Image (cartoon, rainbow over all chains, first blue to last red; front, side, top):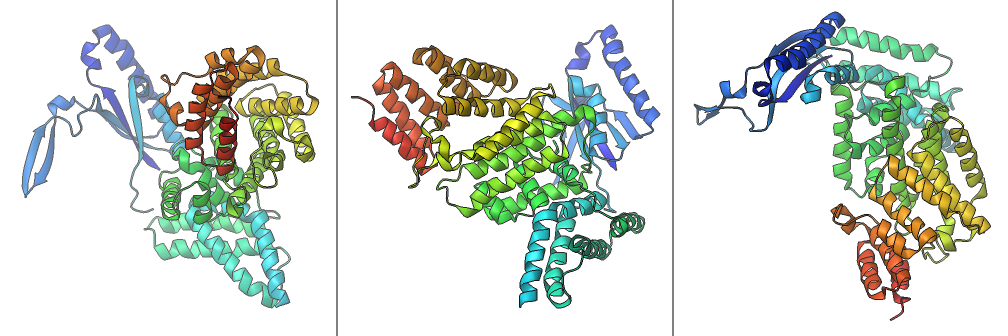
Length: 118
Length: 413
C-alpha cells in the first residue's frame, strides 16, 4: 500500500540554525534517512517544500479565484515536505515515519493513499 | 421440530466457541472485518435452515467456514473492485480455500484483537470493537454497556472497521520489541469492557452482567494465547479477584457492602485461588506491570480481610510501585487511604492528590468519598458532611449512593 508521510515542522526553526547545525542536525540526518528509504526500495516520491511565506492559498468563490498569501491554516508547525512510500501495511509506514528526523523536531502525519481499486 | 432445536443449540454452541476464530480466519485473508461478519451471519442463518432438514454436519465449524468463505468471495466479486481486484481475489480465495483442507482452523483471534486495539484506532472504540469482532456482540448490547446510543455506537464501529481495511492496519501479533506497548492496548480494552460490566447500577441488568463474563472470556483467551506475558496473566488475576467478590458486594436487598465489611464466606474461593496461581506464575517471569500490581493489591486486601492481620505497609508499598508506574489520581487516592491506615487520617489527607493540580478530580466520586472518610476521622465533621454531599451527587449507582448517604447521616453533629 502507498502512504504519504507529511512532515510538519516549525518554520521558524531552520532560519535560527547556524550553518554547522544545518549541516549536522538537518542535512546529515535527512541524508541518512533518505539513504535508508532508498536502500529499502520503498520511496515513490519525495520533496522538501519552500516556506509557506513563499506560497499562496487559492479558493474559488462565486466563480472568482480568491488568492491569499500564506498557508491554508495558520499554525506554528507547517507542512515542510513529504515522502510517498510503498510498504506492506500501516505498521511499516508508521515505523518509517518514526525514523524520520521530522518526527523528532516536529511531527509526521501518515496518510494512506486513496486506492481507486480497493 | 426437535431437529430444529438441536440445530439451534448446535449453532449457538459453535457461535459461542468459534465465532471469533471464524471471523479472525476470514479477516486474516480479506482484511475486511465487516465483510467477514456479514458472511458469517449469513452462514449461521443458512445453518439454521439447513441443519434441521439434513442433520447437523460432523464438523459444524468447517461447514460454517466453507459457506462463509463462498459468501465473502461472492460479495467481493459483486462489488467489482477494479481491474487489480481479479488478481487479489484469486490470492484471497486461494488463501480461504486452505481452510477447507486444513485439519483445524488456525486460531488468529489474538491477531484480530491486536488489529482492533491498534494505536491508529481511537482508544475509546477499541473495547467495543473487540467485543463485536471477537465475540459477535451486537452494537445495541455494546452501546448499553458503554452508555452510548445504539446508532452512535454502530457508526463508530463501522468507521473503525473501515479504517482497519482502508488504512492497511496489519493483522498479526506485533514483533517482540513493540509487543509490550501494543499488548497493553489490548489488555486495557479488555479491562475497559470488564469495568463497564462492573458499573451495573442495579446489579440486575442482564446485558451488563453478561458483558463482565464476556470480558473474562477475552482475558482468559489472552492469557491462554500469550502464556509467557506476565501482564496478560496479571489482568486475568485482577479480574478474577474482582469477580470472586461480586456477590459479597451486595446484600440480598441490593445494598452496597464495602470490602472491609464483606463476608468472606460469600467470596468465590475457586476464582481467588486461580487468581493467586496466575499471579505467582506471572511473578516468576520477572517483569512487573500495572495489572500484576493491581492484582497483587486485591490479593493483599483479601488476605487482610480473611486473616485480620494488618498488612498496610505492604499495601502502601504496592501503591507506591503502582503510582510510579501509572501515576493516576485514582491510584493516588487509594494510596492516601492506605497511608491513613498506617500513619493516621491526617497523613492520609496530606497524601491525597491536589484538586488544583488535577481539576478532573472535582467530578470524581471516589475523590470526595475518600476525602469525606478521612475528614470524618480527623473530626472535621462539617467538611466531611460537605464532601459526602458532593460524592453522593456524583455517584451513578443508587446502592453506592445510599451507602454514602448512610455514612453522612452517621456523622456526629
